[in-house]
Amino acid sequence: METTRPPLPPFSLASATEKVRLAENGWNSRIPEKVALAYTPDSQWRNRSEFVNGREAIVGFLTRKWQRELEYRLIKELWAFTENRIAVRFAYEWHDDSGNWFRSYGNENWEFEANGLMQKRFASINDVPIRQQDRQFHWPQGPRPDDHPGLSDFGF
Image (tube, rainbow, N blue to C red; front, side):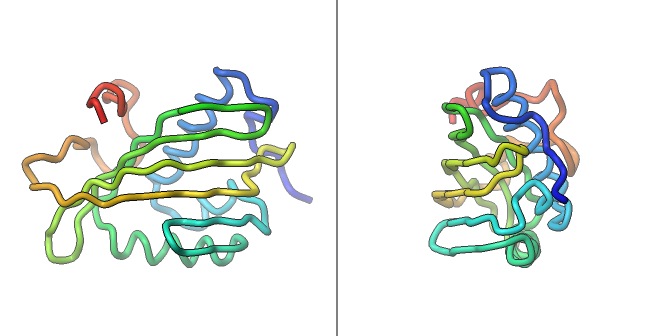
């Protein structure tokens, strides 16, 4: 039997904001198996031009992603919400194995089951090359500290 993953829909401003921060913290862990548990076993994704279905495929996708996107640090921000849907904007910084830095900007649309697991995720993402000295996300690997600025603070 599937567990619940609070906060649960229907979302309020407070619970949608919490859900977004929990997702951000999970992704910043860079542990594919842990992140995949936030999604239904048959979850459907579109990430850029790639279609991913199910937890096993999510683990594979995230494993490849974080082998390629080194020193990944992500900030998500709530954009809008309804009963069981949340829209998010985000930015993350990373570098490739040649030391080239990027800031990736995007939007995600999420749909949740009643148990709080995400059943659909649609992500549109653009990568912008940046110089190392132009990085903004400097916290130690892992969750973003509570006192670290968010996207709106940076004007992103």
